[in-house]
Image (tube, rainbow, N blue to C red; front, side, top):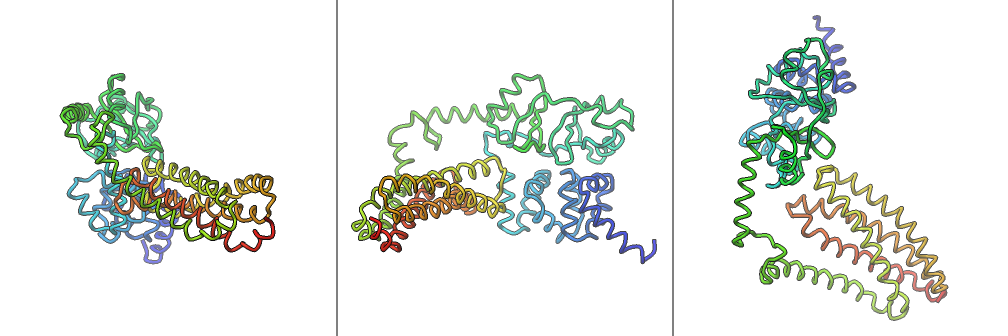
Length: 439
């Protein structure tokens, strides 16, 4: 190979990695970890990231451990969070924590959240160190991959598409007797059962009791394969659940139940009620700022709950969608600009539509064009702010390590009330002259 040909080959490799990442990943998986790492290290980071995150998690881990440390950090940082988390799930906890400590704290926190599952979830029970096979492989290529992985005790293998979505399973016996040139998809069987990583432990128990299987595949909400639950893990989980039930019976649980004592319930609920009271005083203080305006135009007091109520509903809708996205891991902290922009656009569109309906009702009620202008404008502004707050509040609480489910609604209520009251009464004060002419 001449020195003049090297730049051309490097450029062709870069174009191949960028334009055909899944095909490039398949080629990289057939290479040794050292060769694959050398090829990626010779490319710009954005090209290396695109191919690396398309690799199977075991191959991606091998490459990560082989490339220079600086490139390894870039791969973990710039790849999709779910891809980086899948690779880190393959390593031992001590090694995983060392990788996370080397990353930016915000990125590390985001990956830790993706790697952590609640104690009663399917994700906590699964073994993430399972190598799926691509549907496009031949039998010979699949066997070569298994020899590289060197995992023991395999009874069946799971097949995924280029996006990592689970499509079926292959019995080891079928793989052993099939022709080496035969495509893997031709010997792939349908799935008997599957659970999502956030499904509760009770659902996993029910599935395994109803189906005669020893390995239960686990996927994300998008269908990406993330691991397998084995019977041994299930037995251990059942024992732990029984122990937890005994603790609950003697009152050792820190969580309130339907039949918890009144004193216990008061201790759990009262702090949040006190916080809510403080936020209510804050909203009342905003109203107090415009006391003279309300005294001059009493119709404002009648319409004030309309603006606050609509902004509260709009914020609650945005909050519910964002909370669901965080819970199902459809979004992560780095997606906040897209989520906020989307909810702001929704708030603007809905605000305009609701403002038009409100304007008709207020005009027929008051015959005041000034009042129509005030409430229409404030309705749009408050609903846009409510949409932004509904998306941003749970994300920010998660960012600072708080539980969004516990405190999002209180913070959101404060924001929507203050925004609704301030926009409505503030615009009314600015347009007091117009209100005087039309009332």
